[in-house]
Image (cartoon, rainbow, N blue to C red; front, side):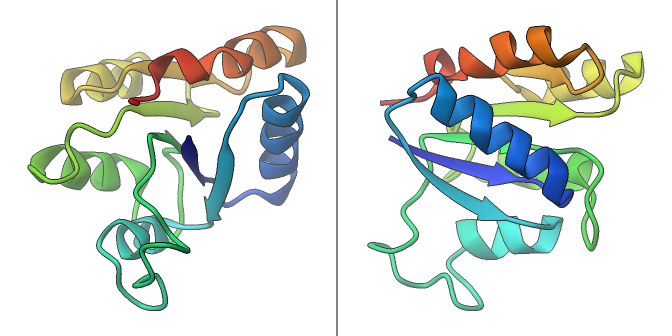
Length: 135
């Protein structure tokens, strides 16, 4: 299984990787740091052309607050693309605003995890994301 982590904050990225590995999720992790880079990865541009090295993910963990291209825009673009729309996306964000949560679910995300729910709850929810991955 391949999981694409879209996270610009290094501390949040380290915590996310730690939790995923601690939970023993059988996956390869790929990391991109901004909204444009995730699109480059998915569309095989700017250094991501090698399909063997950068396979399409079985799951995307997407932050909403990203530089270059906002996560909301990235989510919309992915879900509008017939070649990408079936990739399950879990939002992992500091935003727990009702409008962000509603927007994400309206566009078809399979889960929404707030980073501000406390480490134990965050760890529990993030540790179970593998159930959303497509096989």
